[in-house]
Image (cartoon, rainbow, N blue to C red; front, side, top):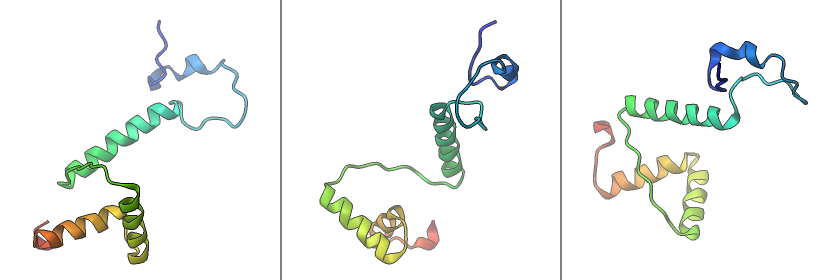
Length: 95
């Protein structure tokens, strides 16, 4: 029978493997954990009605956004959203 690392029902097949260092608390590799966490994050955002927007900016603008967000004690995403809402005169109560 083939061994699949993401298969949680065959953990006993890995019991004989010797691993150095701190024992793993999760049977999945870090890459698989990140993939699952990202999928869960996307599903959470989707259930909240959020849409994803990605764009590239210069390092200067990126640093300015980070600084302004830190000064305002909000996340960079929240800062960008507030700037866009103000630009389009969208009432945040409609969100």
